[in-house]
Amino acid sequence: MSDETPIYQLLEQLPQGGATVRLLQAFDYLVPGEWQNITSLEGMIRSTTGEEDESLIQTIGERAIALYGNPEEGYQRAVWLFQSVDSLDKLAGAAAAAHMIGEKFSFLGFMEKVTPSEETTQCVDAAVKFAAEMAAYCYCNGIPGDSVGDFVGSLSQYAKEDVMRVAAWVSFDCVLPLGPDFLDKILGKLQNVSLDTLTNNRVFQKISHLLPGGGQEQKALIETNMQQSASFLSDFTSSRDITQNGVIDRVRSVIEVSDDKLDYVAAAVDMFTNYYEHTGIQTVARRLSSRAYGEI
Amino acid sequence: MLRVRYGWSLFLGLAFAVAVAGCCGGSSEEKKPSRWETKTTPSAQPSGAITSAAKPPAPASSEPKPLEGSAFNKFFPADATDGTKRVFTQEKTGYAEAKYQKDGKDLLTLSISDTANNPDARSKFSSATEKLQSHPMMTVGKNQSTILVKDRFQLKASSQTLDHEARKAWLSKFDLTGVAGL
Image (cartoon, rainbow over all chains, first blue to last red; front, top):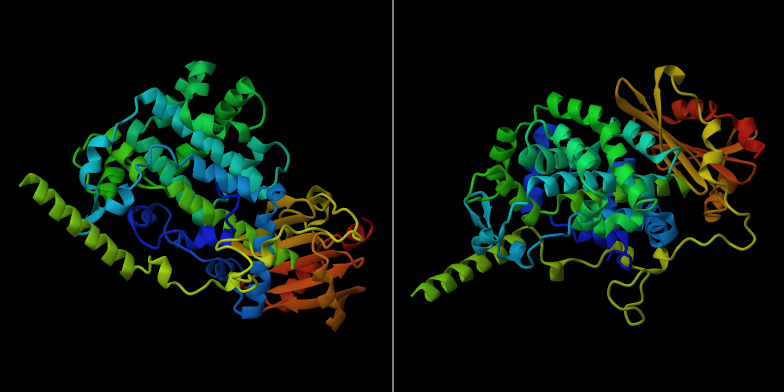
């Protein structure tokens, strides 16, 4: 997937406009000023280090590229995780066929193919995505101590691309389809779903080989990750006043949707955008820039 | 008629998409070659090949095996130093990094790296004119100060707000004796 593509190309391939970028910009109000759409390695190095000397930027960039190029460093796996949880249900050609109606993106005939998932699937999808966030964090930053505890502790320190992604995940994958009590729903479903249900989940199938342990341990990890993060996520949602109405209004300011049903809008966001991959590549590039600056 | 209409709207849609892509610089054909490709020989490597700079870092054979990043954590200035909150941010083989925050804002980043990972990093210290205790010290760019301990471990203080003197003070808060004893 990303293994052959150097990090600078992954960044340069990110769109500077389009539905994903516009949607993230529309949700900037949740994390004011944190996220910028940086689509070059040079830009990421400047943002991370504040350095301006071109030869220094070149040296940092070459080191960052080298670190990313070594699969054992884990950065490629982090990118792969971010890409994998975002690559399901994307309609080939939908993005290219999008056109503008006023300020909004319309996807012409693709809307009829939007199919909302039933609630259990939505709950499991959301939890597995969040487990992927934790796993990507560990691959990117190392695994200090026990992974879940450190990840949960780090959530409150999330900034820039990271906090934008969490805000988007809470909005699009949790509050929008599941409502304000999304945590209770997700935790309840996780406790009740069978291992078979989990292993048949398509998001899980894509990423399970990058989670530690076998099926039961992975199920327990996904549950523990949600349980231990619940307090943070609850505070995050209430302090930023993330509501279904607020989310749907912002989504509709960017994407022309022909049905106001909340799960339908959530499915449309899932199908027509790739915010996880987009911000995930930026996250990895920032961590690489920081480490390269420390190592050169 | 329906087919004609659909075809026309699709044409308009595509034309608009092309126009938008052009305005946004989305046309990859028009982009200049990336600065990161400068080391690539076009005839020798296919488009998109990893450049020489992007080869996996391979410690030279004469270098020792890099230490695990976890070995460095205990030498960082403690949490609450000068009223800051310490957050470890990366721990990889041969590298550990922590940021220190004050009043909720990032103040600086401290790091320890084992230059066995990147031996080239040591050479710059030959031009160092300052010392911290007995360790050669220098600035890198405008936002970073660094020392080399035991001719192997590079300790850095990076900040977009602190000057060299302030960064130097932070470097002195590392357990330098501990690092030298590794």
